[in-house]
Image (tube, rainbow, N blue to C red; front, side, top):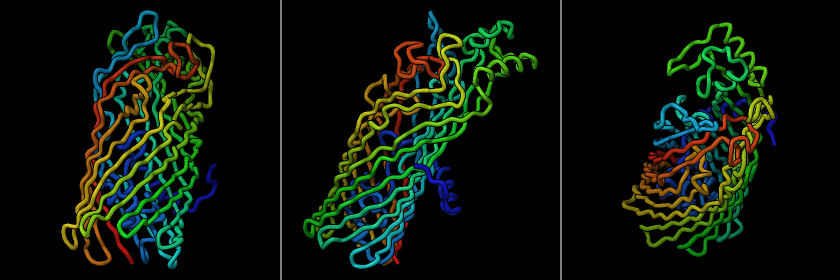
Length: 485
């Protein structure tokens, strides 16, 4: 589905949030946390319903909040994904190595991600709320001269959810909630193309008869879309000490529509030296490539489906000071089995100038995953509560051969600490720090679009293959202000 008409305020809000892109800090392309109070327990405290952020974790918890509640959170994220020992080869009879940089960092140093929530109790049974938050975010970028540049040089995905929700208190033990999710998604990528050999095949008269890697071009692709889904929640107070809940978030389908802009070579590399093409050869070379479909501006699209998830969580009040929390979340990451980036124009496929195709194919074949979180809170004094938690987050990647170079995901462990401080009877502040340890990974990548050898699948690709080792971790600092009216 696509949203055709939006109010100006909603569009501006979506545009503002779209600028806060980040590297993924949870498995797959999940951002990882949508609440600082929950972050402090490694997201184990979904059953707590302690502030307005319960809209994301279990919206039935809104019935536990009297009056009107606001929570505004900001996560300061320092992701680190570094690659090393990178190698790549052109698809020639005798494999020739791709030259370039073989190590570096592919994430930004520091990023900011905001979340906003508001709840209001309409009467003794019904509460309403609105959440605006970032559920999925992933961004990586290689150097433009990396040896892995042909296997997608840059990718980013950012989503913003606008989530109005209603909660209903059935009785003193059971509450339910249902909401609508309007999700804005924006994606960008950069794909490099090896035009050197193609230029030589078109006309050997081009300066130096360029070969593999001597004349690169690239496409900057972007697209966005609105999709729609829903959330359901149930909360059960078993007794005065124990509470359990379920939270379901539906899959959301997107058909991202945008543009691809091909930048074509104006120079070649000969004997390790950069040689500008004469103006007449620039016009001839670019004219030849444009005629093959590499347009200055063409349409581009890709269909994605963000995955559904189901969470089972609980809370137990040990005594007046201690609470313990637990959460198990299943995510259907297998929704990301295959993705096709469709260009407006067809282009030459493998093996020369034919066949032609307009598709670049990714085949990650992700698995469904589980995340297990355990946490606790301790009321140190009347205004100060200490919070902490650990979590294991399973990767959806099946093997090194299916790991994407632009998303080198692996199993990760969360270690979180934090605190809540009551400023007065109506206001409080949460702070949290999380260290995320991500297991070392290796990616064996190729440009064969799911095939096993050059030419096995016809697609828009330079058909290089390569590998790299990855070391990753992340630090998250969060601050949240809560106010009740």
